Length: 180
Image (cartoon, rainbow, N blue to C red; front, side, top):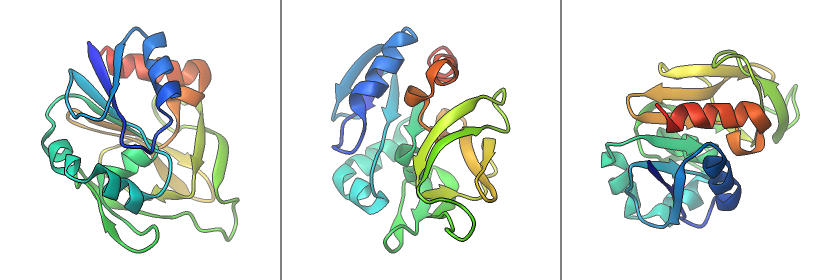
């Protein structure tokens, strides 16, 4: 399987590439949508990511092979985000990305949390926005309240956490995705 890691100027491309290679995938880092499977990484702000993706947004909406969104990449799969105003997302999943309230927790959320689902591993998060509810959630985590940690709908998979930064647990989840 050739996994493409989409380079649109907002991802930690090399660590995602190395993690995928570590689980046996042949990896291409490219600015083109395609390949046997595609990873949409992301670090940064939602609206800027949408702007940088530009016409690839339509290509991503119709991509019909395995698609994995990581962190901001997962958030982009939803209908919209409320980060710095309202910005429309890919609409591959129903739901909205909202700010994590700072009332009782540290924001940004940077650190390890145990997942409720996917075997209950501890994985690494780094984000200030998240999804509260999704009918296609496969795992949640608790940071002041429950949040969506992972989603699966057909060929679309998303991880709010960083599997490439989550040690053996993250590699196991990436291996499961690559070999599915």
